[in-house]
Structures are given as C-alpha cells and as structure tokens.
Length: 307
Image 1 (spheres, one colour):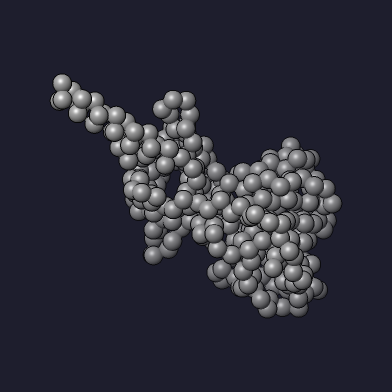
Image 2: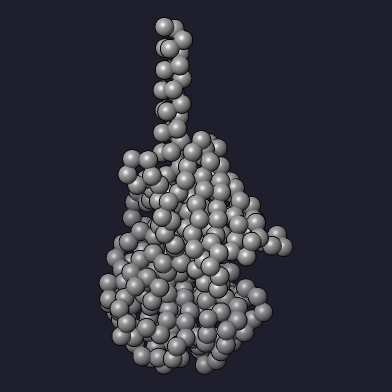
C-alpha cells in the first residue's frame, strides 16, 4: 500500500513539474545566436499553448518577417520545432532545438544550409509603462548639412544634398549615435518607383517603407510594423512624392500616423523584427534607416524623447 502511494505521489509530482515547465515555456523570448566570425545575431521566439497539450508559436530570424510555427514539441524540458525556409532558395527547413532551465533557454539552430549555430534566450521584457510619459524637448536628429550624429553600419553610401539625407544606391543601413527609450518621431521620406526602406524604432522594430500605392494594407507593406502589425489602410503616395510618418513609441505600444492619417493606434509590438540591431529589448536604442533595399531619401527627422 505504501509503495503504491509513493508511486502515485511521484507521478503526481512529475505531472505537476511537467505542467509547470510547460507553462514556463509559454511566452516571448529574446534570442541571441552565435553566428559566423563572432557575430551576435538577434532572433525572437513566441510559444503559446494550443488545445490540451499542444504548443504553437512564431519565430523571427535575423532577417525576414515573423513566421508561424505549426507545432512546438516540448517534453522533459526539451523543446524543438522546424519551419520552412523563407527567403532562402531551398526546400530544406530551419530546425531549432533547445533546453529550458529555470528562466533560461539555450540550444542549437540548424540553418537551411546545414550549418549549426548555438543560441541563448531570455524572457522578453513586457515594457509596460505605469504612467504616461512626460515629453522633453524636440531634437533635430538630422542637421541638413552633414552626417553629424549618424553612423553607417558598413561601407557608407549615404550623402547629404540640399538638406536631404540620401542613399543613392543599395548599401549600408544608417543609425543615430544617440539612443532613445520612449519617444515621438517625425520623419519624411521619398523613394523612386519600386524602392524599399524602413525606419527601425530603437533599432529593433521596423516600420516599413515601400512603393505600395494601391495595394491592400499588410504588415510587410508601407505603414506596417514588419511582419507583425497591419496598417488600417494603405495611404502610400506615388513614387517621387514626399511622405511622412509621425510615430509614438511607449514601451511596446506604437501609434503611427502616415501622411496625416492614423493607420496604427496603440498596438503592441510583440518582438523584434528581422534586421534588428540586437534583441536586447529592455535597453534604449537608436533610430535606424534601412539603406540596403534600394535608393531612399529622408529629411526633417525630429525626435521628442520622454524625460
């Protein structure tokens, strides 16, 4: 009788620990991948339960958009999933394996080219603000004369002409030297036909810029938070016309006014988007503009940071 009771007790404890571990896996994780040549590549994972014992999720690599995970396997602290390639021209899948220990994830990632990388993960911060921000004084981020206060992330192709910050061809992204937490940002942009760029908030969340006039709104088109949030409507102008964003970012909540129309209102950004500088979501970050997807021009870049 005592043996049966002990066995039942151990089974109940094991079941409890497994359920508790499963609940602990759920949520959002900021990942850092140990890539080639010592590079730390940012990544992101979200796990949710589906039904009684199932898990699904979303995954962001260091490029591309958030991808759905149809099934996350999790048993005895070990997690695994696989997803199809996105931009890679292959039919092989990305495979991820990990171990949950306490509040830390770690594991390996087998890329579609067969290379294996290690990674570590920390639970993503909620970034919830208890009080509304008190705004400071506006700061002119671009002086209209030179690249003072900016740095190119690679071989620089950015130039300044007639008060306009230009990337005449595909090349390096550019970021502010200064970093910010919560802010209001005004920025104006212009692109030629078929071009593409983006504004990264804190260097981690891309608001898409693309020649999408007349298309149905979606997160990977103009005005969307790339791969996560669809704009309410498509407000893109024709190529060659100046356009504007007025963006407010408080914690994870973003409001975007594009060309005078509110297209996103206090929506939560779940995690980093592809192309982010890092996955350290709790830290301040720069304003970064994409320069690797075609010609783009910017002007009147003004930020009002929270005190």
